[in-house]
Amino acid sequence: MLVLGTAGVVAALNARAVLQREIAASYRRANSPDLVLWFDKVDSQLPEEVRTQPGVAEVDARRIATTRIADRNGTWVPARLLVMRSFSDQRTGPHSSTWRHMPAGGGGILVEQSSMPLLGAAVGDPLRIRTPGGGTATLPITGVVHDTAVAPSTQERIIYAYVMPAAAALIGQNPDLDQLTVLMEDRSSGVNDLANQLREFLTKQNRAPIRTDALPHGHPQRRLDERDAARSRGHGRDGVHLQRRPGGLRRLALDEREVRQVAS
Picture 1 (cartoon, rainbow, N blue to C red):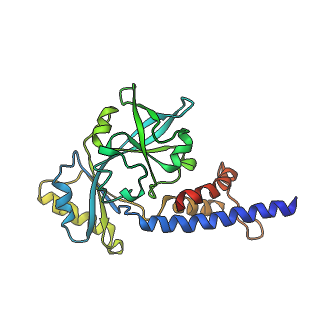
Picture 2 (picture 1 turned 60 degrees about the horizontal axis):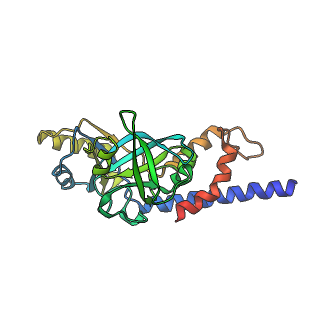
Picture 3 (picture 1 turned 45 degrees about the horizontal axis):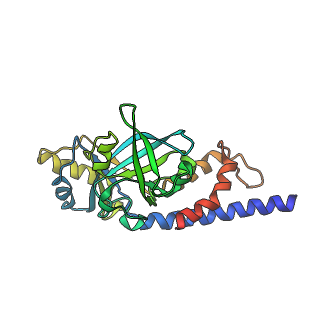
């Protein structure tokens, strides 16, 4: 029993090491934004104006909403809905090369790959979605996406979903995009400095943002692992640190499956 137990711990630790390596590589391939500018509404000219500024590599527009989506058992699961300008020409964040089953015309809803097991659904299935007024609407799952900017749904217990403005309107959400996401040419030059530079520029154009947010750099899973390491420090014996958060044992069991998800 001791040998089997030790082998299981070693396997779990090896899976964690592979997961961390694949997460870092996957995040580097993504165009995750460094900065978000908030507005009442983003018009078609605003991204182009910001894109011309020094230090800016790329710009795109989005809106984020929260809702609930019913799984196959009828349980309403919290969901983060990303309203995107385009599926095929996304400049920051999830890129079109990560879509599977690219939807024609942007209809329907895309779901992050780690969310699919929570829903118990497949591409082509209809999803029931809560509208802001408390009703329900239905959209078909038209694709699956790998979004390296979010932690796996199996850990966060939240559904990540993606729609274009026309589909957002069909489920009662505001279709107007209200955020600009900015990818820097060189993050080491200072996110706050670029934020101040863009705010000053836009204020002169009478387009001052409501607020600016510097986004954390690195995959969220890495930040969660760093938090866990800090919490567990001092709780182990013989130099071995144990996770103390609820669900820690389940977390180890999920590692191997998430390695396959991240690497795909």
